Length: 79
Image (cartoon, rainbow, N blue to C red; front, side):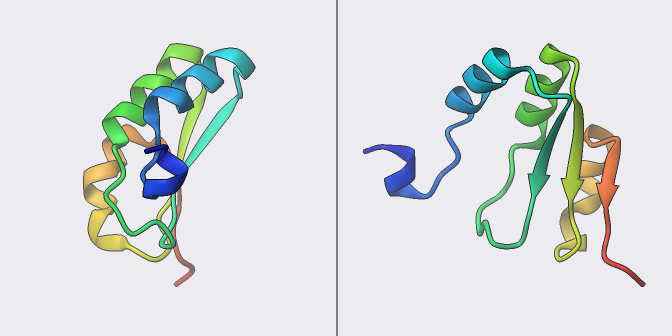
């Protein structure tokens, strides 16, 4: 079954595309994805291509302390 059918992020495919396109920034996070994010894997992918990893953590502050060391940039909810 393909990831688009399971709803899981295909981190191998994400890494493949990141190596192809070499973006300057990878954005992760978002409350619409109901599963845990693999911040360590995303950080590894971003580091491999020299990209900044940004976490959109506006709606789930409970996870933020876990992701903060791996995401040098973050977009928190406004106070």
